Structure formats: C-alpha cells, structure tokens
Length: 479
Image 1: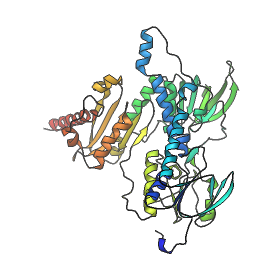
Image 2: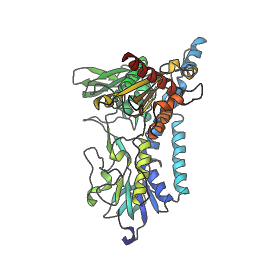
Image 3: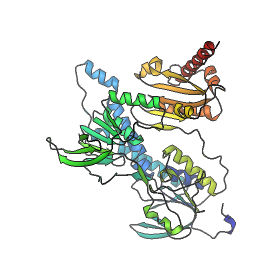
Image 4: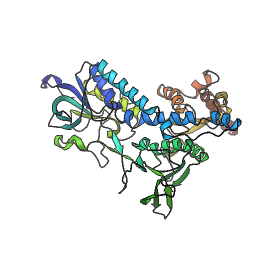
C-alpha cells in the first residue's frame, strides 16, 4: 500500500480505463469511499463489451429465440394445421438495440449519481501515475493516484482467417450478421461457441460445432455436459470433436449466397453459409503503452495480478477479462470492488470461492463447487443426489421434462460440495446451493427445509432425499 499522506496532488484518486463490469464496480466503490474518480471509455456504449457486444446482446437474443420458438406455441400452431414461420434475424434482434441502450443509460446514470467523471477516448500511459486520453477533441493529460485497467478482451481469429461481414464472424460480431443463415459452422466448443450454437439451432439453423478438444466445456461436470450435448443433438446440432481447421475457402453457392468450405486436418470438408469463430480471446492492452511503466501482458494480452488484483506496478490494478479466467461478468464486478477497497484501505474479505458459472445455452446450465471428476481425482468420498424435472410438478407445468439437478455431498460429514443444474431457471436455482455452501450447510439442511410447491427449487429437496436413499442403501448393504 502506498503512503497516501506523502503523495503529491493528483487530478483523480482513481482513473479507470474501461467501463465494463470490473471498471463500473471499481469506480462506484471508490466514489462511495469519497474518492475522485474518472472513467475512460473508448467504445460506443458505456458498459463495455458486456453491454455493447457480449453479455447483454447475446442474452437478449437468446430470450427472443426462446420466445419465438417456445414449444407450446409450436404445438398450438400444429394443432390448427398451421406451420410456424421461420424467424428472421431482424425479428430476433428487434429488442437487442433497445436493451443495450437502456443498460448503457443505467450505467451512465449510476456514474452521474456518484459524481464519476466520464471521458470518451483512448487511454495510454504517459509516465508514472500519468496517462493521455486521445479523442476527436485532441489529447488530454491526466494524473491519478491509482489506475484500474479494465479494458476487457476481444475474440481471436485463428491462423490466417479473416473476418467477413457476410459470412465469417466472431462472438463479438455474430449479431451483426445480415440474415439468419440456413447453415452455421461454429469453430470452438467453449462457452460462447456452445451458447450461440444452441441459440441458432433453436431458431431453425442447421448447426455444426467443431473443436480440437474431445468434449465441450471440460470444466463443467461431465454428466451435465453429456445431457447438454444430447439435447443439442435433438435440436439437430452436429458435433465434430477432435477436429482442427486446416483451411477455409469462401465461394458463391448455387443459391447466390456466399458459403465457406472448411477443410480439417483429418481431411473432412464442411460447408456452411456462415462461420462463427469462437477460438478464444485476447486482452485489449495494445494501446495502453504499458511498457513505458514497466508492465506487460502474456501472449494472450492478459495481465498478471495477485489475489487483490494488484499488478507488479504498485499504483496499477487490473480486473475483468483482461486478467483472464474466469472471464465472467459476475466475477468481474466483484474483482473491481475488491480492487477499489484494496487501493484505499477499505477492509474486504476477498473473492469468495463459491462463485457460480452460468452458461446461457438452450437449455441453460449452471454450477458452483466441485465436480465428480475433481472429487474422484482428489480421492474425496462423496455421494450424489439427483432430481429430474420430469418428476417435478413445476417441470410439467413449464413443459420442461429434460432438465435435472445434481447435488454432491461429502459422504462422511454430509457437507454440500457441488451443485450442477441444467434446464429452466438453472442460472437462478444455483444461488440457493451457493448460499448453503458458503454458510457451511449440507444434506441435513435440505432434508429439513420446506420449499414452495410447485417450484423448481423443490428439486433441492428431491435431490437430497435421493442422496439419503443412496447413503442408506450402502449402509444397509454393509450390515
């Protein structure tokens, strides 16, 4: 920690570069502590990629897909002899710009209420505790006691592949596609690739997912991923795993639309109207002139930080996508807050180990805690409990008979070790288990708790009873 009493006067106590989740929370937290704060944003919208290109647009698009293709509506149309009309890209995107503008205004209002100064432009370091902001109006020089780098990341285009506004997109640009394609090839089975692959499949697009890994999302519980892959295959998604791109050729199809033919290293050829490249991301640090202050990123543009998000330069902190995994909006918010507290001596316990993953595929899935694979590797004795939506009244009411929840408990002390869920409201449900884990609860809590009926939350009770039956079966067999 710097000796604040002996420091010279600065224009600001904190300058935040980037207005995404990490930058927002750092700026607001510092302002709440009575500090002078400035946020520099180079993008079109306040809120960073989260609002402009990533989280908000993609989840709004997902909601539109689910609303326009809801099973009950499809069955109603078939029952009167009508066929559902294939949605257009324009229809699916009709609410995206509205929601993006609204969310940007929310962030802008938050900055105004907390008297946070906002500058539009590109920031670069200009010596110790100094930076230059370049905009259409010219160059403005600022000084700050602390700097928070929250510049986010952007999609990587692998090899010699180049983006094309008609047929080759990344997760940052796919919603700018001119039309809803008939066929889509998704290269990369990570979070963004799987989310968009499932969304487009449910919009009636024939989707192929290719990845050099042998399974999607390997950090998620394997049983949950197996169920996701099964449901995506039911939506006519084809998986080509263990495959790597060797080359790609753009050409005109017989229908007049441009197509891309991809050749794999194993010799396969795949053709699609559009390609979504989802092969990783790189941190946005090139324009920051970090070498001038003795700081540099790794080969993916990521900055190394400690558990309080301090870089190797005492007055520079970093948080969000620019520091790498987990790269979630939720964790980025908390990282920004912790960093601001650390800068100004405000006590904070640090990042909780029980943060959740939320993956907004169709169906959505979410998890927190450990997986069966991790526990088996670590030789931790455990037992599982499973609840299936098909056996839930709420599942029947909702029309979701394929979702499931899996709880993992320590076999000896019965502590809750992991929560894994796929299906309707999975990203909401996970927070109940997250709270129980953080408070040290376990099987006995769920066995003695009453949940509203009918709800999806009741699955916690059903899964706990299922686990109890498994434990008793083993005890009975040992007698």
